Length: 155
Image 1: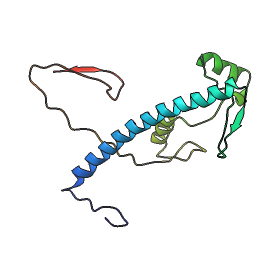
Image 2: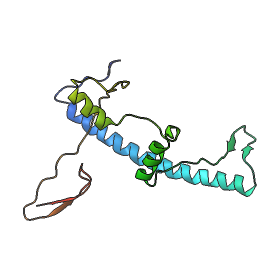
Image 3: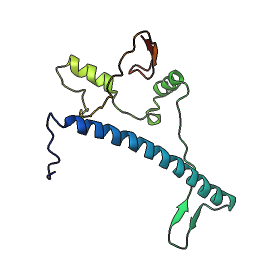
Image 4: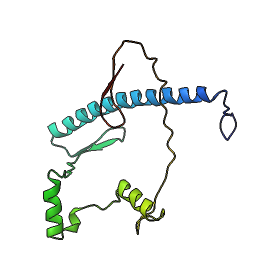
């Protein structure tokens, strides 16, 4: 391996794709385990602070912990919210961002020119899919998590 990375050829690309898949699967597992541990530890520290009516605490080793309440606002009725914002010109109640599908359609209709004020950003994504399982004659299998969010049956 050199500074530019390993030498990849048509004879060893399979090895790198399989390794990438294994690493991604392992990372998801480890991330999940750490997320559970983190949630448990946050709960322990928060309970201690709340039980002792403290907003923060400093340890003998110099670490400190503090807590506060964060409030988020979910749009429960989009139609009612839109009517309120538009009818009252309450623009301060909304965040503006570009809808990706709308921008893509706009660019398709306007010769790849983005909507005014929008700068497209593209990132290369590498997707790894496992090899197809061999079909067994006369056996019905259930396939979950299709790209469109549906389930399907195949024979």
